[in-house]
Image 1 (spheres, rainbow, N blue to C red):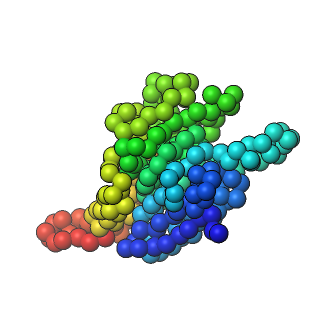
Image 2: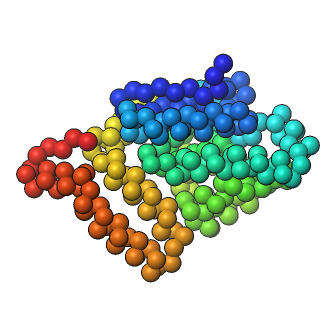
Image 3: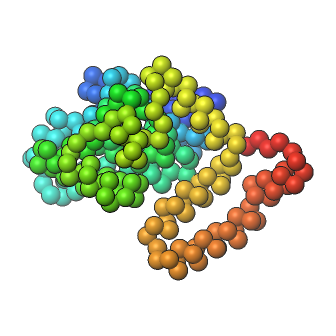
Length: 257
């Protein structure tokens, strides 16, 4: 059975975690499959927006328990290689040139919550629980905290990471983990509707460049960020999409991307 499924429908690339019997826990093989499939979706000219979803009751229950037991016998170098493997997946999603939407139909815990965190938008059912429970087993949420602090700020991140508490429903929205709460019977359709609005109304190139800028300016000083921003502003004025968009606006024409 394939651990990761991929299909394209109406310019949406659907990437599906397909390990329901293990609650889609992150094994080395599943992480590798996600990285490979994301690469394919990134280069697929038929895909403008990516939706990350899962089969089964859970979105992702974090690290695979059997694999965690294996890691106990790894050397530091082997554990470092494995940690880099997961880091590369999170970074690949976070820095994707295409918008990535998490469609969360069940619990997203520890590394599974990390998967949702690095996506650009999160649609979730009210019953889905989110949280970083690593401190409860003597571990640390090391890699994902880098992304979580960027996403929701230090204070809220500390609450989640140090307490190990779970959040769901409106609490998950309040923490900034979820953008939209949707009933289970409407989750797929509402996620697709939102993706289609991005596809039809927005320039793919503009969204990619905006994502890149959001990533880069956070590690720059104010002066560096403003210099970078003015350079990007000037460059984008000469882009084909900008010329097309401005011409359409001035001529009062309907624009379809």
